[in-house]
Image (cartoon, rainbow, N blue to C red; front, side, top):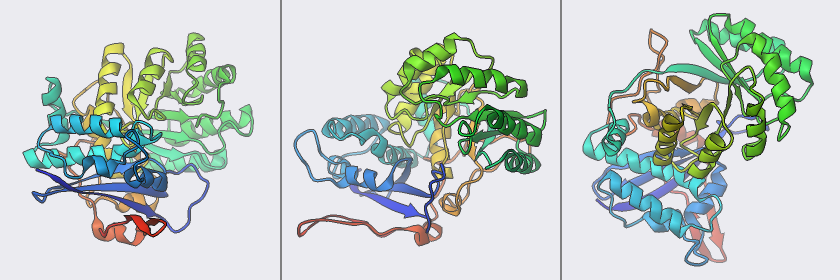
Amino acid sequence: MKIIAVDPFYLRIPKITTAADGTQDTLLVRIRTDEGIEGWGECDASPLVSIAVYCCPMSHGNIINIRTSLIGETLNSPDDILRLSEKVLRNGLDIQQIQHAFSGAEIALWDIIGKKFGKPIYRLLAEMSNTPNTPHPKLPYASVLFGDTPENTRQVAKELHDRGYHAAKFGWGPMGKLGEDNDIALVRAAREGMGADTQIMIDAGVVWGTDYETAFRRAEAFADYTPTWLEEPLAPDAIDAYSSLISKNPSIPIAAGEGSSTYRMAEDIIVNGGVQFVQIDAGRIGGIMPSFQVRQLAEQRGVQYVNHTFKSHLSLAASLHVFATNPDFDLLEFPAAGSELSQRIVKDPFQVDADGLVRVMDLPGLGVEVDIEAIHPYLAPVHIEIGTETVFEQSSL
C-alpha cells in the first residue's frame, strides 16, 4: 500500500476571539492510499503554522516538509508508522514545530492501518506492546472554562451536573488574575454547582509562571473544596518550579503535561517535575505512539495518565485509544462546551452511557468518521505562492 496524498485542511468558525478556546479553529489531516483506504487526524496547533510544516520548500537536508517525506512511501503495518515517523522527524530536524504538526498525520496513519487490518487502534497497540487488549470504560470529566464571575461558574457547573456529569474541570478565564479571594470564590462556585458527590478539577492555565509559592498557597486554599487536582499552575517548562512546588507537599495533587510537544518534555515533567497526573495531547506530542510511550512511563513511575483533549471527538478518539486498556487510568477529559465546529467534525460522537461512563468504539482504526458535509462550511481556503510557484493549494474535501 502506497501513500498517494497528504492533505491538511484549515477549518475555522467565522469569528475568532481571544478566549482560551482551542475549538475555534483546527487543522485536520487526511492521508490517502492507492488501495482506497484513507485516514484522518487532528492537530491541536496553529493551523497555518502547521500547514507550513506540511509544505515549506526544502532549505537543506534537515528541513524537508512532511508531505515530501510521506508521499510515495509504503504503509502496510504499525512498524511502517514507526519507520515513517522516524523519517519525518529526521528530515524535519530543524523545523521547530515538526512534532506538533506531524501529530495529525501520525494519527491518520494509525487510522489507515487499523482499517486495513479491521482492528481498533488500541488492539494494535496492545499487540505491539504485548499487553492486555481489553478496553475499560472511563469516567468523563466535562472540560469547560471558568465563567467570568463566580456566579457564572456556579451556573455552568449546575448545568453540567444536570446533564449527568459526575466530574468536571474548570479552567482559565479569570483564574489567577483578580486576586486570591476571587480565585477561591471561583473554586467554591464550581463545587457548589457540581455538588458534593462529584469530582471537580481546577485548571489554572499556567497563570503563576514560575511562582510556586503562590501556586502552593492556592492549592492549600482550594483544598477545602476537595478538587481532584490543580492543573498547570505553572508554565509548561518550569520544571524546577514544579519540583519545588511538589516538594512542599501541597494538600491536593498537581497535574501538568498538556504542553508537551515531545516525549522528552513529558518525561521531564514526570521524572524531574514530579507531577502526580500527567496530561498528554495526542494532537500535540507527535501522535498516538509518543502518547503511548508516555503512558508506559507513567505506569512505570506510578503516575496517573490522563488525556488532554479540548478539540473535537476526532481528537478524543485518538486520545482514548492510547490508554483504553489500562483500568487504573480511569479519567477522560471530555470536550463538553466547544464551538459548533468542534461538535460537527465526526458523524457519531462519543456518548456518555447510562452508567455515566464512556467507552472506546470497537471499530477499525479510530472508530469515528469525519462528517465531510457538516464541516465543509468551515473550510478556509489556503493558497501559498512563492514568486510564481504555488507551493500549497488546499485540496477539496
